[in-house]
Length: 433
Image 1 (cartoon, helix red, strand yellow):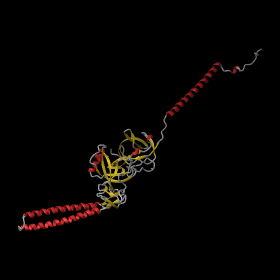
Image 2 (cartoon, one colour):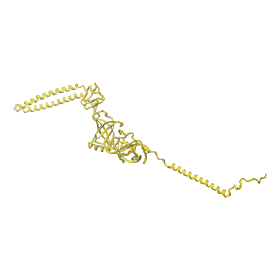
Image 3 (tube, helix red, strand yellow):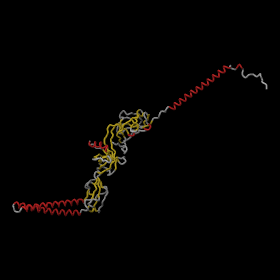
C-alpha cells in the first residue's frame, strides 16, 4: 500500500500557536479552575458553619400563659380544728320511786316537754290510804298532847299553891315531852306518805326532748329503779365536748383568762356545712395523760335543733385574730423541701421569691417576704423558672373584702372573676400546732 506524500496537512502551520504560548494558555485555564474550586469550597465552608451556628443557637422560648393573684393586707384567724361530740347539758333517766301499776302515760315519743309537765301516773290508792292512816294517828296524838299540856298547866297552878307534890308536876312535864315526840313521829309518817303519793305522779324534772316510750299503761313498775320509764335530754341550749392538744392549751387558757369569748363553729362530718356557732364555755381541770389532750366544753343555743345529742361534729375554735398581715391564696405558695416560695410577676416576667408562711385560713395563707399589692403566679408552676416570660390570662385577684394598695401593677389582661373565700374543710383549716 502506498502513501500519498503529496497529501496536505490538516492545519496550516501559519495558523498554529507557538509551543510556549500553548503551555501558558493551559496553565492559565488550570489556575482559573483551581480558583473556582477554592471559591466554591470557601463558600461551602461558610454556609456549613452558618447552618451549624443556627442549629446550635437556642430558639426563643414561648411565653407561659398563667393566672395570677394579688397579695393583700388583712386579718386572718388562728383556728384549732378538732373533733367533738354533742353532749346535752342535762340528761335524766326517769325511774319509779314506788312500786305500783302504771295507769297513764302523758307524753308522746320525741315530745318537747317543759319542767313540771306530767309524764307517767302510777296507781296511788294504796299510798293515799297509808297517808290517811298516818294523818289519823297524828290527829289522835296531837289531842293527847293537848290534854297532857292542860294537865301540866293545872299542876303548875296547884304547885304554886302547895296543893300537890313536886313529883306529880315533874311526871306531868315528862308526859308532855313524850307526847310531843309522838306527834313529831306522826308528822314524819304523814310527810313520808305524802312523798309516796307524790311519787305516783311523775313530772318532767327538766325541759327537753323525751325519747322513745319505754313503759305502757298496765305495766307494773318496781321501786328498785330497774326499769326506766322515760329519758329526757336538754337540747336548748346544748353543749359540745371536744379535746384540745396540750401544746395549744396555753394559748386558749390565756384567752379565757382575758375574759375573751372564743367563737366555736360546729361543722358536719365532712366539714362541708356549718351547723351552728357557739362560744367556748370552759376547760377541764386536768390533762388526759394517755392522749395528751384536755377536754373543753362549748355552749350552743341550738334554737333550730340542728345539733343532736351524741352527734359527731368537726370543731373550729377561733383562738385569735391576726390583724394587718400579708396573705395570698394558699395555691400560690410552692414548696422546695422545707423552703416555701412564690413567683412574683413584674413586667410580665416571673421572679422566684422565698417566703415564710404562717397561719392558713379558708384557702388563704399568711406570708412574710412579699408585700401587699405584689402579683404572684397562681398556675403552671411546672413551667415557671426565674426570669421566665409570661402572659397573664386574668387580672390579678385578691382576697374578697381586702383592698390592694394603689400602686398595684396593671400589666394584665381583663379579669375572669376572683376566687371566693371557700368554706373551711378538714384539710384547709388552720391549726395552731
